[in-house]
Image 1 (cartoon, rainbow over the protein chains, first blue to last red):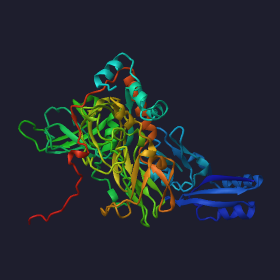
Image 2: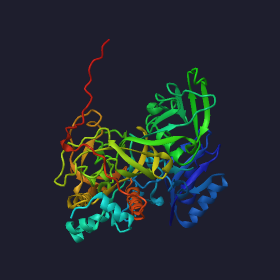
Image 3: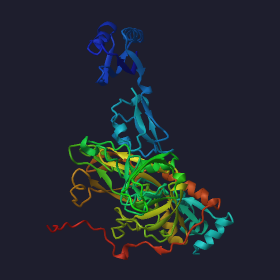
Image 4: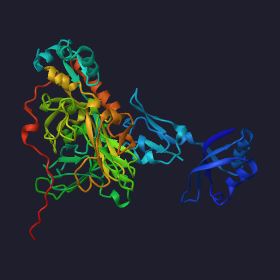
Length: 135
Length: 402
């Protein structure tokens, strides 16, 4: 079994296709949508957790690539600018998945990328504009 | 035996003074006892780093050729309006000033990504800033328009002047309403889902000198990465509040007005901040040395997070409607543990003030004093204490004449 959080970039022309449905039907994968949006230029961004058997997962990803979808792993997309961050910790209680926490020894904020669901609440809450999301 | 500031300075010059941070003094007093600690330790350094809205700077930008009387005209620094009601080329910029075309909260909640605090940060970072000015023109200052890049190094004067910094204790903010609210204490989730506080607690300058026995007008301090001075008590200074047995106020009390040469300062210790839905401001780093003149002062500096209590205030209704009352009190050890218990519920906490940076400041100041680069000053006057009669007042509105 494998389970990964990935970001799918749908180019123009694919946003109205029932693609995720194929992942379930043809590749026996399950998914949990964390975020979905369509930009004004009719390109789509979909953040999801995709799970299934290793071989199925590989084939599913291959299918997505073949039809023209770009795939990125989520961890590349949420970035904390450590120069801007002052480790105050005002973001910590805002995070719904406890992806941010204070290291009591170093007094530094830890960002656990794998727990992040890209809700972007921390981006809004950070007075120093230290949290950035790049899709 | 009591010491004097002069004697401590002599020891600093000889490299023999014992300097510790307000965190280190706690265990020293616990291990050695108050009497021995007060004898051995000469200086305790404090620190704080957090958003302080009543911060500002003034500049003398020098004269153009031909000359321009910006005074009484209009001026912008990177599109942020500066106050011009001063002499011809003196400008005053406040940390919360916003560009005229910032949508504010018309697009609620507004982002306030760039304001006066960000201009000050850019200046101390050495960046060029655009000055745009309009003047009415006079015989001696004929020019009416000006648009130029300016840089901190080229100004005649650049002075950080903060009318209210370094609050002695602060309230804890929660939201009892059923709507998300956007405040200067950060985003507060509905129905008591988070609690935000803002203090360095046991490291905070005025919490280590609760009755202002050593910190006064003329006290030399670490300010924004450079040297500054306490120049007055801060606005809203409110010393006459309830205090614990350790003399530490149980609610916001004393404040300081500080100033210093902006040219010495750095973007690491002066940072523009943006509070969503609230506005722009600036985070300021301040460190104040406390001379250990006697046992009493030593015992004040040994104050611990668990002995400093703060009031929990509802920002959903009580605060905006100016309804007095606290939901309860909690101490900074609880606040810093990441959760507090209030109204039978466990609430996660977040600090607006950076303890990491506060500790860095206390250590920087300790090193500066150890190397003899920073000597202590004798205050020239005290700041008002609990018996001064000063009491913070609300504005009582009166109808205006028509």
